[in-house]
Image (cartoon, rainbow, N blue to C red; front, side, top):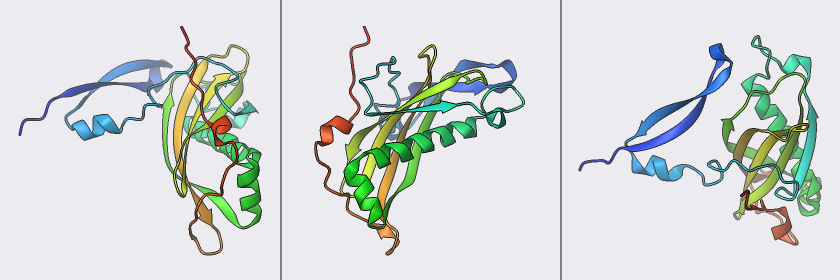
Length: 188
């Protein structure tokens, strides 16, 4: 059986040149092509109404790498802090956490789009994109607070977890679920 070759354009960071370059990779497995999230292909223009929760972050000097921009691993820390604040901002999640439940990250897809520099302050938007029986899928975007330039996007999957039994747990019933979901607006 002959597999069709599919092209996927991925952004990769070229550390030595201090800019992002496009690289083309071949995908010979159609299943892999279909696994790319519809949200990871999105590059939402800043709109305060797109995300339910917004978090502000200041860049610390310790976040920088030798190239004088934020180290890629620190992007995950920013997103984690925003996710924790988001989960705690949903009353039903907060109540369930007081009963010994928690959110455990099981998967993250993160696209680094632009470097973040020491002088930047950030706005991180977080919203749901899907709810399962015990899983939560969210979409997050990091923007410059001053220019609203998009710096990164991430899609995460987490599981609601019972800390006592050390097993996944059913999500609590959430009132008015739609207000927590990502809202796409026509950017044109």
